[in-house]
Length: 141
Image: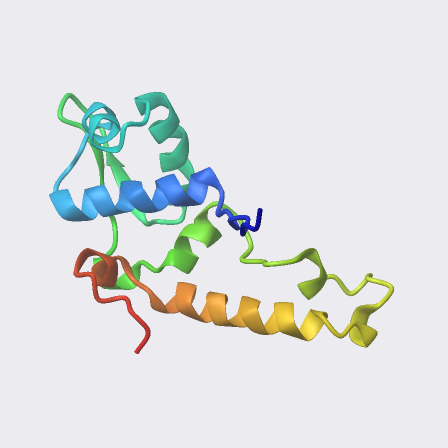
């Protein structure tokens, strides 16, 4: 049986993107209970996700009885790469693309392939914005 394993982007990044998209759609303060219902995620987990997003000024929290979270930037200013940055995650396809300690290093014939593909993905992650995702206009130019 032949199949392809899926490369996965971690849960923090996937849910962080979903959280930002819900906030972008709502265009107003949304509490974690409402976010949780919309995203099918526990409010407790959403509060964990909110910390790094808030520290990186992608969202801001609003205190009080009608508090919650709201976007802190315009949708065209938030890229997928900015979500990776918020969670201090790198965009890496393979450990060897940024690891100079590899014994094969420059002699490896496969390394340029992984580096090329990683560069393509990084370019797209820096290009694609929330606005493009919301408008379904993120295809390759």
